[in-house]
Each structure stands twice: as C-alpha cells, then as structure tokens.
Length: 360
Image 1 (cartoon, helix red, strand yellow):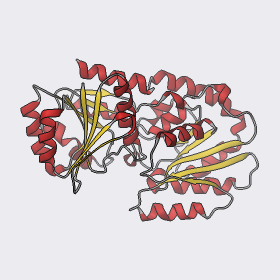
Image 2 (cartoon, rainbow, N blue to C red; image 1 turned 45 degrees about the vertical axis):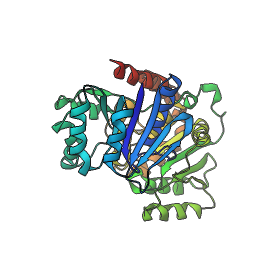
Image 3 (cartoon, rainbow, N blue to C red; image 1 turned 60 degrees about the vertical axis):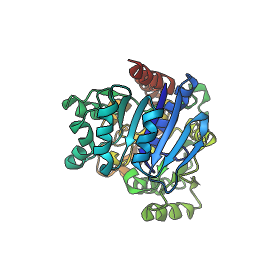
C-alpha cells in the first residue's frame, strides 16, 4: 500500500522531538518493514521539495494545498490526515468526496481541547463531512466523544518500540533512587512543580535528580526555565534541540527511562500533549513508577495508584511520597509492568492493528 500522512507545516516532522512526531515515525517504520511505502506530506513551505528520511520514509513538501491535492490524486492509495489549515478544510472535504471511492481517507485525533467550543471546532471537519473509512483516536475519551457523533472511531494507543520495555533484571540495582523529569520546559508540562520538588530534595543523598528538557524556540517562558535549569550546578540537566531527533536520540531516551526509578509528569493540562501522553506509556514500559495527575484517561492507562496526585499542591504531596519511596517502589514497578503489558501498545502490535483496519 502507498500510505501518505498529511499535515500542515510544523504539525509534525520527521526530525522533530514530540509525541505526534514519534507516533507517525514509529508507525511508518513498521509499515515500511512490512513492505509498504510511506510518505510524509507537508504544505506551507516557500518551495516544493522532496527528500528521503529515516527508515526509508519519503518526505514531500509543498507550498500550497492545491499542489498537495494534485500530487495525492496520482500517488496516494491511503491518506492519513494529521492537521490541515482551517482555510483548507472545505476544499479537502470536496477532494475526499470526489476520491473516496478510489482512495481511503483517515483522520488522526491526538488532542483533547479543554474548552468545549474549541473542541467542537477541532472535530468540525469530521462532523460536517465524516471520514467514512475511519477516525483514529489516541485515547479512550477521544474515541468516546467522536463515537457520540457516530464518526467510526478506532482507539489506537500511541506506539512504544520494543527497546523501551525493560526487564526487571536490567533496572539499576539498589542504591540512590533516580528521579527524572523528561519533556518540554513549559508550564503546561508542569516544569514549575518539577523545580519545586527538586529544590526540596536538593542535597538528599537518597536521590539522584535529573531533567532532560527541550522547548520550542518561540516559547520565551520555556527558554527562561531552560536558562534557570542550566544555572543549577546541583542538578543534572540535559538539553536537546527540538529539531534534532534521530534514532540515537530515541535510544538514549529509552536508556534514560531504563535507568530511572521514578518519573515526574506533573501535567497542568493534557491539551499541551498527546491525549494519552507518550512519555506516560514509555515510562511504564521502562518500569518507571510515575508521579502524575489523574487527568483525562491517565487513571485508566496507569491503573489505580496512590501516585496519581489529586491534591492542589502537587509538589508537597509528591515530596511526601518520595520520602517513603523505598517502601513502595518495587511493588509499584511490578504493578506498572503488568498494566502496560495489558494495554498491548508496543509499536509492532499497534502498527499492525492500523494496517488491518486499512486493509478492510
């Protein structure tokens, strides 16, 4: 099959770090291994360009939607839509109506807007002109919401490569507990809580504290936090450029998670993330105990646990839990491993699930 993944410029990228970016790269890698052709199609660029990226993924860049449609007419069999500009939705809906007897169209919904009006706008294209072949949803609540409009939703967990799964014997032996934060250095991800927790644990010999951060260059506040983190000599801080993804970057992420005991994910809101946060299930696969808030479907994904913090003062509760971590970390780790296995979210399984859907 010739599978084309469509998005406006910067909605996802083959060389960018992020949840949506990782989802499409991981699916594409398995699809190509299965003998299919995968092309990432972007528009909104000054010039048209064609390149070949990681794993044999083709990348096509166009300046206008009209050029994209001319290309898809002749080249695409299956079109998976990530994000298109609101001004192009009507013309693309007409394109789908004309070609859906010859091509299959799917749309991926990965975000859940807190504001009901914005959420309705986000879903509007599918409501007005449903994707007859299917709507791919990365969280149960997205699937439930779209199901109310009978939009043929299919739950697709964010895929996790096998090298993230960490057997018990590969976890570091006893000693200092490594407490880690990985993610963007912005408020929506909870960087303020991370700083507060680590400052309270500073100097405690029981813990090794690490931050692996990145940020969008246009986000001034996130850059301020990046500079602050760099200045903390007592903190093990690692920075990664957001446009510098590589297979080595992903392998290092898996290694950092393997070497971590406890992962901090103090999301303020999930609308700044894939609705089933990729780091949540990556951390679970790596055997990390995760301190986070019970937002959205996180309680369903992570399972019942006292580490899901309801309290308004997340940092204070997290510190109290960490002070007694030696009493619960092993049992929680075993529970998390069983929970993530029950989800069946490894990349091979998820990619084959989507391929089976496309083949019907």
